[in-house]
Amino acid sequence: MQLSHDTKRFFFSLSAFTVGLVLLVRHFDVVGRSLAVVVDSLLPFIVGACLAFLLSVPMHLFGKLLSKKTKKDKPFLSEKARRPVSLLLSILFVLLLLLIFSVIVLPRVAQTVTTLANSIMRFVPIAQNWCSELLHWLDGYPEVRDVIASYIPDLGQLASTFFALLREYAGAAISTVVSQASSFFGNVTHVIISIVFAIYVLLRKETLSRQCRKLLYAFLPKTFCDNTLRIATMVHKTFFSYVTIQCTEACILSSLCFAGMLIFRFPYAMVISVIMLFCALVPIYGAIISCVLGAFLVLIESPSQVIWFVLFILVLQQVENNLIYPRVVSTSINLPSMWVMLAVTAGGGLFGLVGMLTAVPVTSILYTLLGHIATKRLADRGLPTDDPMPPQSTAQSKHKTV
Image (cartoon, rainbow, N blue to C red):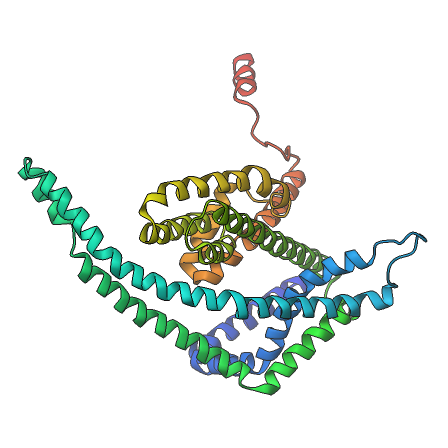
């Protein structure tokens, strides 16, 4: 029996895949070391690509501002000069943010953390007295008092244990971050390559895109190239929109929190606003974490204001959820709230903080692709794309008619 050309190609591909899989399993350690060497060699370019993506956000904004037309119905800058000027303004903007954060925010945060540690140690005897007064008030109910007393720990020992764990894990985390950063940034060559590569990508992205398309269509099937470019465009658009709008949302929410805390004279306005700035980047859970941490800080410094602070945060989050968020974020991701929660939970459990930050756009991409595939398959089968199952009433009426 003579096999067709497609059948021969299928068996050849299956055999090659099987042999490759066997070799991969048998020499997994060698492959792992080889991949580590390749990734380490490409690390400056990976960092440069990430830096280019982050710089493209303010660069796009500056590009739109510089493209506005003047009174003579001409753009403010020509298209040839617009991109380098936008890139220069973006770099200066990022450097300005880093300077403000390192000169103004970080010293205030460090000073507040030291003050907070002292406030916690002063708060421990007060809280212990509250517990003692509660137990004394329950002397007439010995059964209830004994049950509550069994759940009240020694707050002094608890605070000491907390600070010991904080010093241990914070020191380990800081040393890990510093060692990783120093291993990369300590190599001046890597830093220069990353910066130069990021600038080259941003200035020549049309040329790079055209070259990549040329290589794809030259060596791969046209259908595969079309689908690959369509998915790549959707991935870039989803991540760009999500990062842009999520950062904008975090800045707006943090600024409103800082202004409101200054107006109502809540303590630790700077620290809580910084916490909210970073927590707002994580959907759903970030709001809960920032509210709990902020309430704890206010409780330590001024227990009488903690209820008003929680009410202020709840009102602020309602304003953000009902007025700000729907207008700026809902258009960037095509994902229902239930899938957002599931994506953040699964991403955080599997990949930690990076998973929580990237889970929503990744899930949105998969959700959109799955919807397109399902719609195409339903159309190929001649079924309705909105609801392939007929309504129950129609099905029952047809059954009765038969």
